[in-house]
Image (cartoon, rainbow, N blue to C red):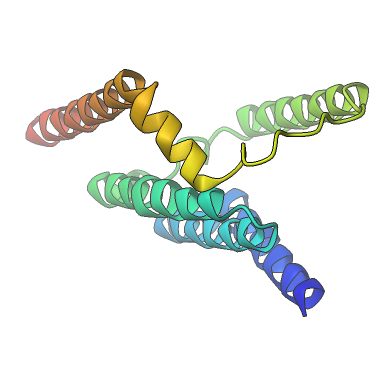
Length: 165
């Protein structure tokens, strides 16, 4: 049963990823495809027993990133079209660069292949991570939240400024 669920979630993740990169009729559909991909990836994390990663995937990527993307897409002027639609040369150069970086990453990962060290017992639990974040890394967590808040405020100011002019 777990193998079947894995293959279903993997197929949904690939379909969602393709929906992000393939040219769709509306940009909002690409943002929703990103949300579908993130939900499928969360399910894969849950299958692997990484409940915290699965929950964080849903909270951060689906809850925050996809909503902000959808909001930004809806606030922009849809009549202008995508930025690279009238520049096929730039699209081709971008595709070659992405393929080159992907091949470079695959080569790097193949070089780094080696034996994995054993993790200490109890080090990967959600409780241990929560205690670590709440005790030793409180300041870093608060600074990250403050930076995210500043980014959201700056984005809203930029959108308001561009819509006013």
